[in-house]
Image (tube, rainbow, N blue to C red):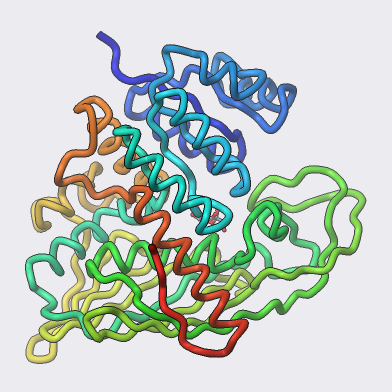
Amino acid sequence: MSGPGAAVIGTGFIGSVHIGALRRLGVTVHGVLGSNAERGAERAAALGVGHAYPDLGALLNDARVDVVHVTSPNHLHYPQVKAILAAGKHVVCEKPLALTSAESAEMRALAAASGKVCAVCYNIRFYPLNQQARGMVAAGELGDIRFVSGSYHQDWLARETDWNWRLESDKGGALRSVGDIGTHWLDLTSFITGLRAQAVFAELATLVPERHKPTGPVETFSSAAGATEPVPINTDDVATILIRYANGARGVMSTSQISMGRKNALQWDIAGARASAAWHSETPDHLWIGHRDAPNQVLQRDFTLMNPTGTAAATLPPGHVEGFADSFHAFFRQVYADVAAGGRRPDSTWAGFDDGHYEMAFCDAVLQSARQGRWVDVDTD
Ligand code: SOE
């Protein structure tokens, strides 16, 4: 008997990462759906996928497809996920889950009623040392968490000539750096600490207020060539956010998509009452562990030295650095094992639609706080 089959919506940068991870797991990708039939066919050929669906209806009618991966621009997540669940299929949706928290609340309810595996692509959880850190916090090795700090900085939108659909709020959402990368940081630190943000005080800034929008399509993380038109920008290039957690802990984080030289740099630093820990996405096989009364340690990813949570996500031998693509492999390995098991197993660690909605509620609070200049509660109800 063959395992679950997949289809992938979206054929850009992240769609091809999904396809690569699925192939590595031996999951058959029965087809892709592009932004139009012609591009779908072109990209299917380039990615070595045998079929491009002409439209979503054709994809959903394919009985071989059990799991649909949604890697389309953010504004399409809501209608596509609703259709996928109505067709009785499992779904793996890119982040942020939706354009608004009203949409994500409805998606959370539909997911709960469906009984299907409904995962959100907060893949950074699946770097093995982030899973290790979660296991360490759960075992009390850091003690009560007191302070969470960090940032997620990139440079790919630093110039006024840099363009991507994420810059347009009707496609990406009202928040850009916070929605696109800040929610990764929030998801990851909440996952590791087990603490959700209760209230935020935020400032947002658009430091490149006008950009040259290409008149043709542009791939994520690539440069545009050809004709452009000037357009005003109303989404955040940077954000600075203070956080209060329910247990009294405090947090501070920043996002930036205009930090020259910071390619894709997420870092977190978590201070507990017994010990601290820190991690940086550009050196992902190293976890710093801080002590007061003993020398600090650096744990290099090595499953002979890691806890069961960390080991479960690791694949390659120590010293063979696991990176971005490996995190999708570890993530989908767990998701597809859950699909095969008929539903989420108790020890699974992927982000579900409840987490995806929490991240949208955080975005709402950040936006309201920045507009009103005050603390705002994160309301997931
Ligand atoms: C662009 O900012 C982006 O591709 C995000 O959308 C991804 O989630 C992140 O992994 C890398 O950067």
